Length: 336
Image 1: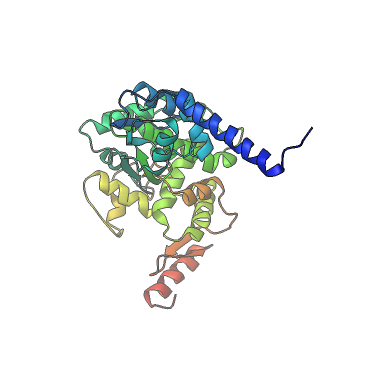
Image 2: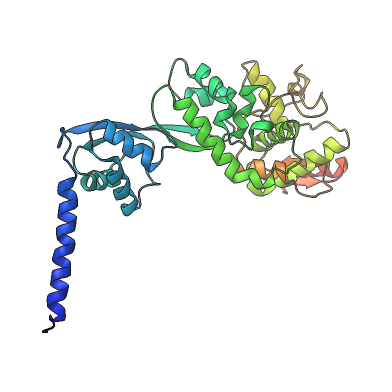
């Protein structure tokens, strides 16, 4: 019996393989709207299966399974961003390739460090945004299940659990819900290791308030853990925090914007005046950054009780009030 040359065997194998691929494509029916541009909205958290099913439902492809396999083959099954896509209807292979290149239309929503509830709601650009955001924060289902027992009773206070970032969110009535889910899940990924098993909702609430104060006290990240340590020491010694950031917030709530705090300013009658009232203020004063949360959850071990800002925004830390006054004088004279 004669043997086939190796080259001939390879050619036969290639031909058989090509034929199988061709047969597979023929077996996949073209959608009735082949060539038409179809608009598809992809929501936050959808899997490749969810996306493929939606594409089949809208007539972009005839087989969601084939599209899902093509997405996996291209490595985009976990990379599709939420938003609105305009894709030509056709075979799964061609649709997947177009989807790989496509840029979705989505709302860019910023959660900035220090942002207040009203400022986050304004990012949604809807008249009913405050109500939608409050509803989204109210539902425990929008937070990681580990966080649900630790959520503050006041939904508006839960903004501290939204990690600052610019998020791409699908426009519409679900935008607030998707924002809370996305931003709080990121918060949990960043900080879950520092939330101990014995944490209570009060512990997390207090840490959030402290982190929000640290956020507005410090410009330099390396100062944040030390400021947290100072505040921890003051709280432990039943000393008032004397945070200028809380006084600025107290005046802001009255519609008055101040950039520096005078002796007259600290006389304001407000529960946020930590010069007059010991302990933490009743609520947070804005969204903390990642570094502010890290500082609040892991304050530096320090004996310092005072700090004062230098002209470059960094701080001088001192242990006694006399040292604190001396540092202030040196800063005024330009010696520090």
